Amino acid sequence: MSVVLFGFGGVGRTFAEVLYSRTDVRIAGVFDSGGGVVKCAGLERAELRALLAAPRGGVASSGVGSRGGLEEALECADVLVDVSPPNYSTGEPALSAYRLALSKGRAVVTANKAPLALRFGEFLGRPVYYKATVMAGTPVIDLARGLVGQKVLRIRGILNGTTNYILTRVDRDGLSFGEALEEAKAKGYVEPDPSIDLEGLDAAAKLVILANTLGASLSLQDVAREPVRYLGRVTKYIAEADLERGAARVAPAKLQESDLLASVGYTLNAVEIVTETNDIVVIGKGAGRLETSLALLNDALKALGRIGRW
Ligand SMILES: NC(=O)c1ccc[n+]([C@@H]2O[C@H](COP(=O)([O-])OP(=O)(O)OC[C@H]3O[C@@H](n4cnc5c(N)ncnc54)[C@H](OP(=O)(O)O)[C@@H]3O)[C@@H](O)[C@H]2O)c1
Image (cartoon, rainbow, N blue to C red; front, side, top):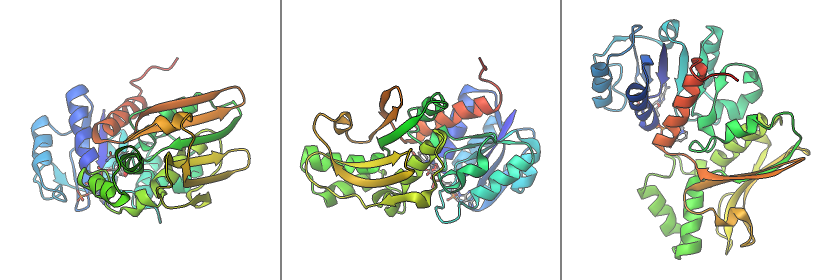
């Protein structure tokens, strides 16, 4: 059994290591921005080590396997694993890669939010697994799937760890917003394009994916967004959707100290799901290379039929 890695950056490399150290699933193709290599029999451990030692953008010139395209790689693999950067304008090139994989009867496992945030409906009912896209360290997508059939009234959450870190450093530790932002950048928490975090695109994409999993029909364009800013104690950058009205937004809000979400500090994430019978709050880790890789691993094992049905 094998997978194709579409992207070989921080998460892609960690996922490859986790896959080889914990399973017998092999990698039949690896792609980065400079092209890709294919080996249908699956990369040996030594070949993976050589790829891990290659510089960013250096997969195709690494000498490992043979140079090849995605179509060729998908001929011999079972699953496409998308760990490429999000393109919130078009979803590409990941969107086309999913269509190609699905047309060949392959499954897709993804950490990239953009294709689903833009075109969730296209992939409904298809073998597309995406629990790494929302609170990667905490399987809220699995929880949401368990609620299908119930009427879900609304969801509300802290879905972006970067802005929560900044706001918490200001709120609890007395830093200025600028100081906290610089610190978050130094720690590697901020996306290469900071507006993705600071203007709410990342949180909106996660909100859309979660809302659709719960049965709503929302797209990224439907989410109103206000940039993050500090409003005084206790400010949180809240992503919320009223599923009955179909309204959704991401905006800073001042919370009561007694609000469960007010206690969620630093890079932690949280989500509250209010259904016709229940009010569920989940607090846990969001993104992170290992957390995301483990979510991808679980989805890949599911896609490969390695996790039992009951
Ligand atoms: N980092 C996290 O904790 C985290 C958590 C949850 C979800 N995610 C999502 O996971 C994905 C990967 O994140 P990351 O942190 O690993 O990003 P990253 O370090 O920037 O890696 C992205 C990889 O995609 C490759 N790439 C770029 N354009 C490509 C193309 N056209 N075709 C194939 N590959 C291409 C890059 O190539 P080069 O190496 O040549 O630049 C790089 O290998 C993103 O969608 C991110 O939003 C990340």
